[in-house]
Length: 197
Image 1 (cartoon, rainbow, N blue to C red):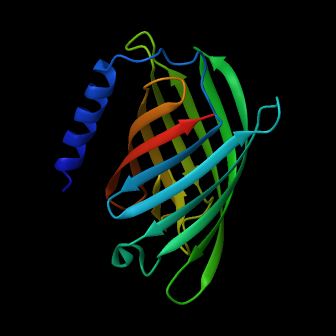
Image 2 (cartoon, rainbow, N blue to C red):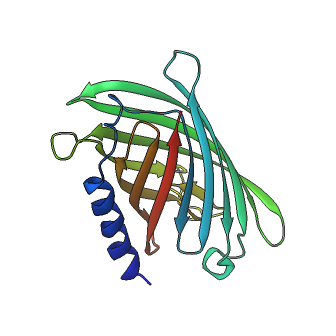
């Protein structure tokens, strides 16, 4: 399975890059709804910039079918509040977030606050419509007590690195392939589809 996901990812991105479609909108879009799939995990998300500001709010819900991998975790809801610093350096946006996650385990719900920073940039010099991001998320502690979601993947680790390569098929639709590395855990590959509005 781990060998199939990278091949599927590359095939999807190659097909999208070769498709004839309307050019992607200029600038990075933060108003979107999306669906992500990682291993046996499904993630639904929505985020929006408030008014004309750089304040970002979001919500995501994760359904983890593989309970054995997450010590009984079978779902979570996560709220995000963040700020987007646009074009900080080399046309790169920096997004700083605080996330409140409520995880529903087989015995009881538990809350967790996690903090993150993500660097996001258009890569039109490579392929028009391509963009990349890299981020780091942490609880500020080495303790593991409940799960949190980052990059479309969920785990109960204390921190995680995530990278993503996305392609804007047109101004509304985006496909993406990501890799999430939770501290002390295996990598998780994530495939995502988003609708920008």
